[in-house]
Length: 214
Image (cartoon, rainbow, N blue to C red):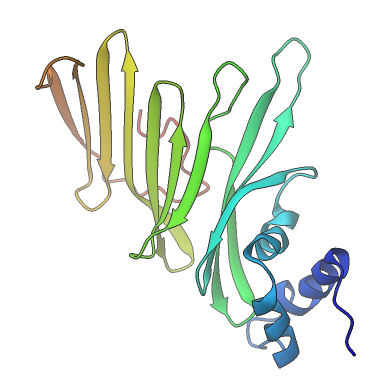
């Protein structure tokens, strides 16, 4: 009877059989079966682990038949500063059987601290877009990423925050090439200011940062 693979044996097997497989060569049937039987969590560990610093741990993960996404994090301690959580947003798509295009970025997710915690979640929509939600104490941000070939591009970004009794909203739409920023008093049913700005630049994962739309 065939013995079940340990976690370490599974990762060693998958690295040699899947990740390193040439794009023109499909994995052998048994390799495909074992990959399909693995949990999404293990698949994401395998796909993204070598692209991240040692010691990162997975927070959330999700997958469809050919798209995998996850968020990893690690605690950073620097002398003279409070510890904070640094996070990586990871995406992978299967471009050939057993061959994946992997992208990761630590520049789009806000750092989380004990006094300013940030919750994160990720989901894959019916449209094929990957949606990332960040929730802070008085603000939230939702970003949607769309695959164009082997590259993931920001398709929409929506953020809302409250400060000093004022509500701030900001929405970016790649299709309209527009950024709309507005604000108003929380108790009012209208905005005091609405500003529209044309943005023709395409934001690809790896180039986009938290300040790109500022």
